[in-house]
Each structure stands twice: as C-alpha cells, then as structure tokens.
Length: 451
Image (cartoon, rainbow, N blue to C red):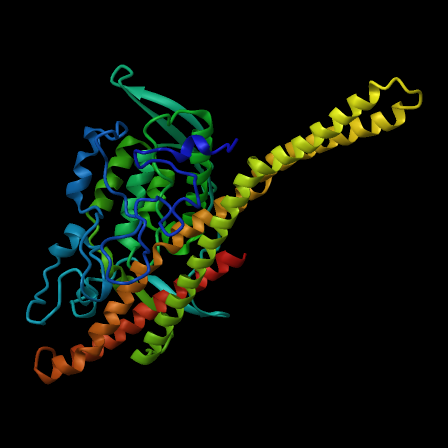
C-alpha cells in the first residue's frame, strides 16, 4: 500500500503528497494552471487566507488582514503583481500624471522619491558575479518536539513546535499560524526581489495523526532551513524575531512593528546597494532577465518530469512489482510442496532449494515495497520543495520584466514632457540596481542547488 495514500484524498485543500497528481501545479496544488506565462494574477503559492474550517485561527489574529498582509491581487502591466498591499498605497507619491503607471507596479520604485536609508542590503562582486553579502556565521535552526495543545476548554486544538536557532540554542514555541504569519511577512517584504516558497499545506481533518505531524514537521524544517540559508531573509528583523523573541510582550511588539513596515513590495529595491558595481545598460539588464527566466522555466519542467516519473515508480514499487515477486515466490514454494509429496528419497536437496528460492523472492518483494521510503522519499521531497520554489520565480521575474518595459517607455515620456531627463536617468539606474539584485539571487539559488 502507498504509505502516503492517506494524505492524497484530502478534499479540503490541505496536505497532499501526491506529487504527480498535479504535475503542472504548484506545491500547494491550489492551481492547475502553469505559473510561467507572465501577466497572471497573484502569487502562485500565496496563502489563500483562513477558511471556514480553519480552527487554528482565532480572534487574536483577526487584525492580520487589516495590517497590509499580502493577498492575491490583480497583476499590473507586464505581469507585475501587487505585493505592496496597504503599505504600497500609503506611499505619498503622485504618479497619476504618467499614463499607464499604477501605484503598485515597479514604477513605484523607479520614479518615487526614495525613503531615508534604513537597513542596507549590499550586493558585491564575487567569484561567480554579483552576490549578496553573506554573514560570517551560517544561521540554522531545528524544528522539533511537536505537541498537541488546546484552548477554550479543549474546543480548539492545535500543534505547537519548538524552534531552536543555532545562535541562542534557546527554544521558542510556535504554532503553524505563526509560521504562516512569518511567510506572509517575508512574502510581502521580499517577494518582489526574492522568491519565497510557500509553507507545507495545512490539513484540517486528521491533522493530529502521527504520520502527518511527522511529515509536516519535516517540511517545516526544510522551509526554515532554506530561509536560514538566505543571507537577506535570515538577517531580517522579522525572521530574527521569529527565532529569538524573549517573551509574549516582545513577540507582540515585534509583530506590530513588522506589520507596519513600509519598505515592502517593490520598495525593497530601495534598500539594495550595489557596492562598487557599474550601472548596467538596459540591454544587458534585459538579457540577464531573459536568461534567468529561461533557466528557471526549464528547471521547473525538469523537476515536474522527475516528480511524475518518480511517483509512477513509487506506485509500481508499492503495488504491482512486489506482488509479482510474491507470486513467483509462492509458485516456487507450491512446486516444492508437490515434490515433497512424492516420498522419493533424496528429494530434500531439490525441495529445500525451491523453498529457499521462493522465500528469497518474498524477501525481495518486501525490500522492493520498503525501498522507496528509504531513498525515493527524500528525492521526491527535495524535488517537491524545488517545485514550490520554482513556482515563485514567474512573479519575481515578472516584476523585473515590467520594470524593463517601463524604462523602455522613458524616451516617449521625456518627449511628451511627462518626466524629465534626470528622472529617465534615475529610472535606468534603478533598473540596474534591480538587475544586480536578481543576479545575486540567482547566484544564491545556483549555489544552494549545487552545494
């Protein structure tokens, strides 16, 4: 039997381990459409908000939706998405004099007056090209010790986990909704520049079953480890709060501060500073963008193909293949029994050999059925994680494509006195900064992919 079959039939949009069932969808399986053509709506993996059955979400968190948290929104021109939420609309910028310019697309960064410099995200020249500034100490954490908790006299139940960062080695307690809050903050803050993969799906029915809890903890661990390895995400204030808040008061204060952050969406590029790197011309910016788009699309196709083939192999190993070996083993042993009934002296040497061969085939059947859990499981989990991550690239790259299109319009806007020549120069310079951020992110992605 397929050990993950119990999770495959979840009809409530929750946990699913059926990798090949939605080969063209995202990790969450919330859409079956291909995420790659630009101009789609929203983030392919964006959390859809708590449903009617979500009993882990309570009144304490009702203000999340009014805090400018990321939600699916209509795409702007050129595939740019609205990642700024309420914060984007709060920026005091008069852009309506520019035809076709929205308040949520890349032009918010390309033409706005930049906020005062806060935390700087540096990009340097490394051996492989532009790279993020990496910390001296590699952060990591352990997600462990899942426990069932309850509130309201047992009416509400949930699972809580210990998260232990290597920086303090002191555990902090988090529920799934806390991980989800972190995901929304990271997506809102960095999603225009850094692909933020979604969390493993939340399952409502049967979510306290031991196998499900174990698997979700493994996937939360994988998600946290990936975030820890990212130099920008791991050093961010909101991520550090999640890993090392001191007490409930510290957590709530940090939470409110993170939700009021205005350097979100495309404005995150205003914090990026290429150190000693020359400005790129628009042709080179566009070439790099297309190069990364082609690679991530091709890798996405390859990963999905491997998941499809791997899932088919899993089903064969846990279904018809071991049954065939069992049938062969049974046939050998049946023949041995027939020969034994002859009563002929000297029969034992042959019948013992036939019986041994039959039992060996039965052992092989068991080995074949158990093997996927020992090796294929980890291959599939890793590729499933990459499938989710690659599903984020179309929107992130879409922001860059939209910015390139806006810069291409600059000459026309100057000619019609919509913008000044100095504003056109600033747009080109900022598009170059965006390109360096994309190159640094792709070099980080390749490094993690290989090492």
